[in-house]
Amino acid sequence: MTRLQITLSLMLLAFNSSVFADEPPKFAIAIHGGAGSAPSSEEWRKNRTEVLEKALSTGEQMLKSGKSSLDTVEAVVRILEDSPYFNAGRGAVFNAAGTHELDATIMDGRDRSTGAVGGVTTVKNPVSLARRVMTETRHVLLATAGAEKFADEFADDPEIERVPNTYFSIEHRRRKLEKTQREQKQRDEDAMGTVGCVALDTHGNLAAATSTGGLNNKKFGRLGDSPIAGAGTYADNDTCAVSCTGIGEDFIRNAVAYDITARMAYRGDSADKATLDILSAEQHLVRGGIIVVTHDGKIVMRFNTEGMARAAADSQERHEVHLTD
Ligand code: ASP
Image (cartoon, rainbow, N blue to C red; front, side, top):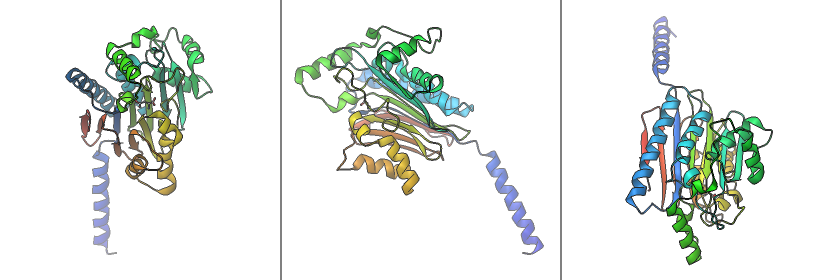
């Protein structure tokens, strides 16, 4: 190399690194508000869109200001849990016994630590109790009466608010239960409205959270995929963060959330290919939707149901909310 070539190379290197130095740190966030059919009423469409927009903007701002993906997914899911228009928290569906049992998981991609609650009945924001299971116990999943007793330990913690089970009883949901029981027929829409969030923060860490009331008219005591790490939720900094929605039994049988990370790690599949292959498999049916954020900030949102409420944003100015297809 001549002296001139060396000087030019050094200048190019300096230019490139200054370009990279000016690039904003990478972040990405995806949210789902459940797979299934679109809500038929204008009121529901309008409110769902507004809440999704609020959840997305909150998450986007948190990530932009350097907050962790773990704090972000929890905060986003809490917003969706507080809305009656999603099947999580306040808007949780009815089980066959006419009550509400809620499931949630949170997972930290840094070390695969995870916490979950299943079948809780008086916890306003199950995702925050799931986080306490992760940070305050040596366990991964607490269910039913044991989870309620664990919640009692946080009587002074405003994030672990308790409510009567009737707090979750929305008239619209009651009508849906009665219709299903009358017709003795489960429908696609019976799985509509579960919420989930996956995020990559500016420190390069991934996290995922999912929260649900489960399936409309589900058997008393039934747990779905949402409180099962590896089925409905997963996060690993080496690959991606995943949150699922749909017929939970399909997602448990096929270990869907983990399978996506495994296909990426062992086969070198892209997140998009892994997700598409799982949702289009004919032999092992998986009915629902999946959102993914990868370690390098790619977002995948796919579903094989009629629709999936979803939203996404990233550091490249992407910002979008879709109610259905
Ligand atoms: N996957 C949830 C469950 O089976 C339901 C849903 O996603 O709507 O509990």
